[in-house]
Image 1: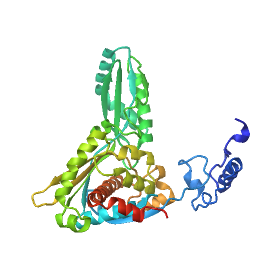
Image 2: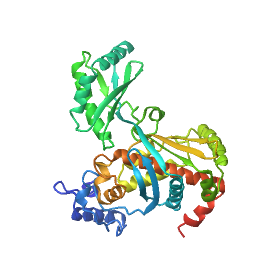
Image 3: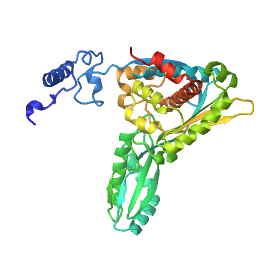
Image 4: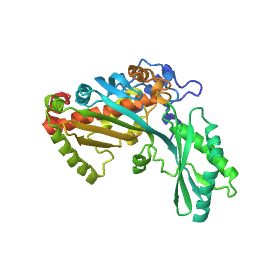
Length: 390
């Protein structure tokens, strides 16, 4: 590749209006495609430093407002108007309908029951005995390892080192709490420092690879479903029988019967989520609020549960064991994303658990609406009415 084919960069100031224009001119000359809309942005290119490289402009994505959504949580309380970024017609309308239903029934109760973000080094030995003995040493030296890890971060705390011995290797998961950050970079730095301390202190000077792949970064896994990654969040409400009949045009007994049928279908398919569509709401909310959108791969996994009560009402819950979200760092400081977080009262310190509860409540509302639309025969007709770009 010749130098003329290299994307222009400026070592002194690569995040400027001029440098963005230079790159657009370069790609237009190469492809013949002009970028008039991409170039129409209002944010300061300097604000994107640390978020992107080779900046040329912005993607303008439709942003809708759903709600109000009443949440009665440990961290999120009140009526919320939720920004959702999507190109899928009917999505915002459907989530709004679900939010109306759960709000009319008293709101969604939410709780964050566990925090755990991982980096998962694997340590390599000559035989299984050495790996086993090393695992015992890790337990005995935990406090020193914890100190080494936490020397790299103000907010990350090492709480556990899980062990999974295989052959002559010891796979581990270093589990942290990460305050208001999502924590993947934080835990990577901290675990690297811990592993270097381990290699210096242990008599065998064990070789290691910083990720043995059981942290499953940005990939769904059964391990996360059991052990938690990010935040384990539960959202629940009781659907009143008359609200189901009048607003959703379904009977709660039908909903319960369908839950049994859908659970079997999800089991056959090996689905990561047993409800209707968690990824839709999570992706739309993540994009709006500056989350790492690839974390939808982990965050959408979960279990939905229903119980038909004696009075005909229907208890409905969603458990999301791997919600990875942040209110500080990453894309949360970009201007439009920050505005959306502020809309939810979720920007800045001490707000990550609040955002996680809102995520779970949104998922539950979306499941209520879509599940009912499928049973009432509204699924196709609503997409025909609202989801076609004519």
